[in-house]
Length: 144
Image 1 (cartoon, one colour):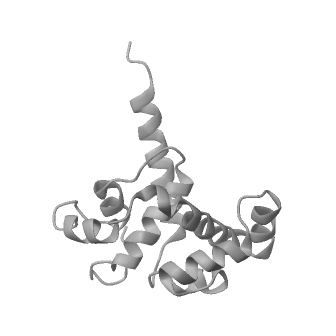
Image 2: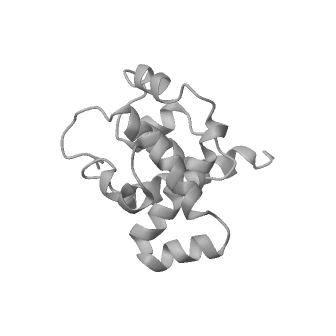
Image 3: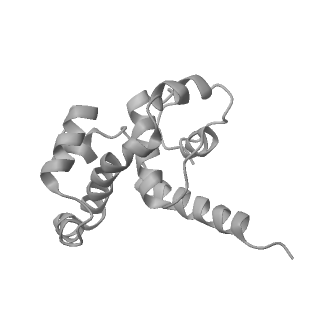
């Protein structure tokens, strides 16, 4: 199950978007090169340089940006009510999010979804997040 229709490597922006999405959807887990490579349907080998370039800044500083992508994901899944719910829940402030998006990707919240990689599979994101969450719980479980 490939995220892309072609086998071209994702861009640094794609990787950054995936990192942010995984950061938000799997709280407390810092995505690794292997996680993101698997997310895009690649093996980690050959993906390392792209990963290194895309994640030069500390992942922690991406969290406000990730909140914007979370809101965009909600818009995609639940349309406008998703964004309203995210804002109402205090998850995000639209002007701050738009500022972050503009600075980091040169886009606004409204067109964030449309500018994600062509063929981006939102269901695959959900599956990847559930998988990561499951692995994290297994790793944290006391071994008896």
